[in-house]
Image (tube, rainbow, N blue to C red; front, top):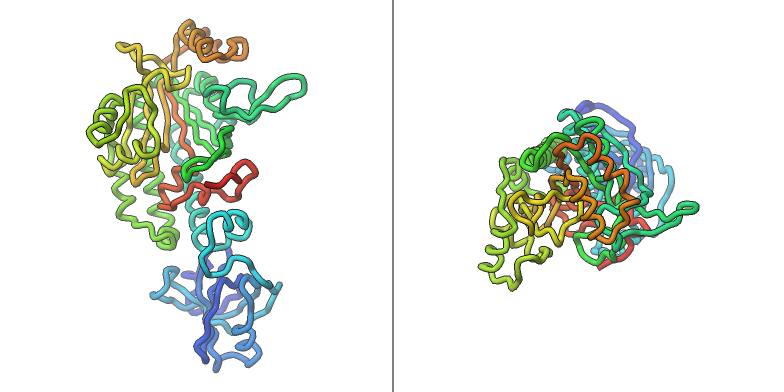
Length: 426
């Protein structure tokens, strides 16, 4: 049905499912979907056989059918087209479909996610997700990156061992990946600019609207690049994603009641940049009781983003709260060269990145201080022995960024299915 504009005033046959229906006596209105779009089918009593009209009134929600009829323009609907149905052929009749038009709680809907995907809002979110993924590949390919796939089972931790899922890989310890970053650094020193896109894991019980235990990360890594150049790529990337969604997902944004004028503001570059020090001062003036050196939570990130009404970079966080691989600041021992990009509207951090440490001895010492075994990172340290260069990178969490782009309330609405690891609800 997505091709309806090509077939106006022509007869077509479409495989559909029924999502809802109503009747006014002489006309039955069937709300239909075919996988590509949601649209209306109209059955006029005087124009069909009695059997067809009776079937249109009695057919049950989520019954699959073949419908034949004429495509008409319909300016009153979000889709813009409807089909005047002449015949209906039931393929498989559904009974007692559990997701009715009434309101259901998030727990119920996630337990029935395999069916909830058929509803208009998750359907719209998933189509926008698909556009974001397509746009990601286009952006990085156009920028001269190549895709490198990092392993999902690893022997080392990029961000500390406390959030690792442990398993055994034959005769040695292994972990579900927290990030592909360390491997992408190796890739960057081979190809210059690389990115990965794959699942990552955090062994932390997920009880907020922002966090997932299993999620997908886009992680670019760039050789011969300092942090400011990386920030420029990050903001161009986000603006590109927004532009693609605005261009290709107009109907989905309407379904989600997401105002495109709000999204358009996020294509204006550059994004503001503030230091961690400035952020602390702003928070204190805003009534927050906190001291320098703490990490920011949801309330703090929301407050900071609200001051700009645009994505905002917070740069140079304290060394003590950041991972071991970040490059130290050239004039300060207490901070590292890094940045988090905070999304507006209360969605929090969507990108975390940094310039990477390049000095072998410094990195070795940081690995030891983090309580990690340097032997497990010997290959990573090799990157500092054989032609080390300035390099930077970042990671974007797909689901949280998608939650922001779509304006949805809960990050679990941005995943196709509630995987086993993400079945802990708030």
